[in-house]
Length: 115
Image (cartoon, rainbow, N blue to C red; front, side):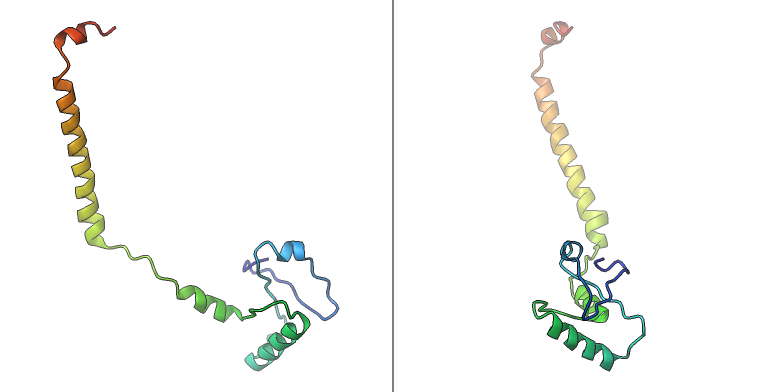
């Protein structure tokens, strides 16, 4: 019910199942008569009058505008193709070097006892 395209049509006599509406914290209303912006504002005020506990009522356009204010994730090509591979290669080189130092300490007599 929350922003999935399905909605609840509210009427002054409508029963609302708060178990379903409460899971996402939002309720989406669908108007089937294609109202203009002035009529939508009037209906929002009516919903606020009927349900005073709903503090934040907005249209889908306002909800989408709020989502677009989130900072975008930007992929930096320099990081992706230069810095990250250098970090991975350096880490691999350091671990290979440390492994080679450890394997020099293994004596040939120790390898003979490996079964």
